[in-house]
Image (cartoon, rainbow, N blue to C red; front, side, top):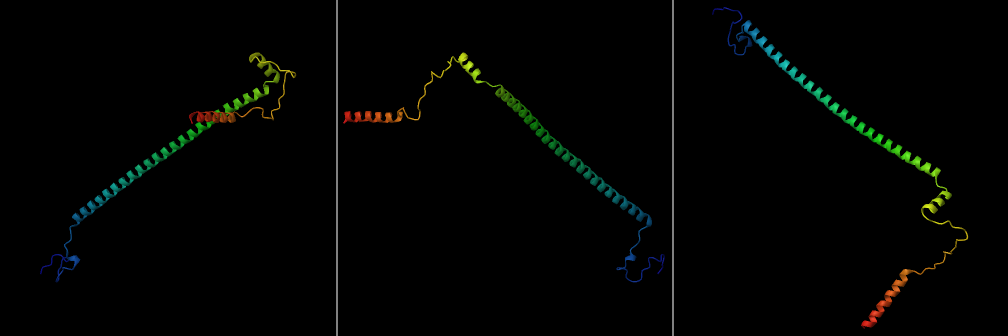
Length: 165
C-alpha cells in the first residue's frame, strides 16, 4: 500500500469513523461559511426590519388611539362648559326676573292706588260704611237643587205610569 497523505490512512473498516470522510478543500469551506454568514445576516436583518416596522406601526397606532381619546375627552369637557354657561345665563335671567318682582313688590300698589284704578278703569264705586250690609252665612238659606230635581222626576214618572196603566 502506498501512502500519499498521512491523514487518509485506512486500516480496516472505517464505516464508523468520522475522520474517514474526505475533507473539503479550505477554499470551498470558506465560501460556504461566508455564504451561511451572509444568509444568516440577511435573515437577521429582515427580522430586525420586520420588528422595527411592527414597533413603528404600534407606536403610530398608540398615538392615534391616545389622540382620539384626548379629542373625545376635550369634546366632553367642551359640552360640559357649554351646559354650565347656559345654566349660568338662565340663572342670571331668573335672578333678573326675581329682582324685578321684588322691585315691583316694594314699589307695589297701595290701597289708594288700587281704589283709584278700580274707580277710573273698571267703573266701580266707592263703598261707604252706611251702604254695607252684613249677612249671616252660617245658616243654609238656599235649598239643595239636587233634591228638587229628584222629587220632580219621580212626580213626572208617577204621572206617566198612572196614565198608561
